[in-house]
Image 1 (cartoon, rainbow, N blue to C red):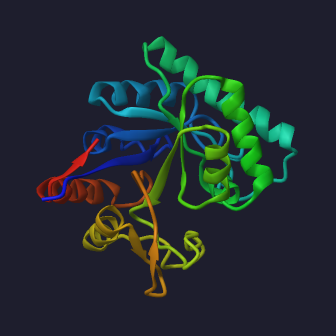
Image 2: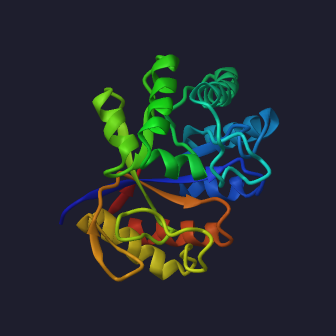
Length: 246
């Protein structure tokens, strides 16, 4: 029997307050660090929960836009975006240092994530932030994206990410949240989605097309309304199918 392994991550620290319930079912987390959500107190709370559960910790920086939850593109200069992202990540690093922990990865949030996947200028800013931090940190980014390709060229370790609870277009972009079919809520559909990625490196798009994809980490959004149910179902079924979550 072939053995598989996968990292399951969740976006947390975003004001939902379900982190204590989610943490036992994930192997890494992405903590909002003040851009679209969160502050030092929420970071401290979530970091302690992650530490308690042995969960790898990542920064989840965003366009500095709490009003729109970081899901709208902001017109910032490259330097303004650079300074904002650097400040957000350093704030989380200061919390981690106080707990004797280190940052495992960085995963951009929302509109920033989607824009950097296709826009070289935005991707360049994120890579500049990595180089400025000057410590070995992984990047969670979409497969075959501008951001991932640039980071690899710049010798940044990339973990390709897929989304358990989001539908995909044929070009591997995410179906817009403006559409009613953007989010996958049914846990059985989520499992099918995830197994296709892990076992066959393919995903079924919203148009029924099977598209190649690679992922070593899979995300369930912490603000998906039934996130806990999805994570519990995934954890149980993946474990039963001899897929190690780590």
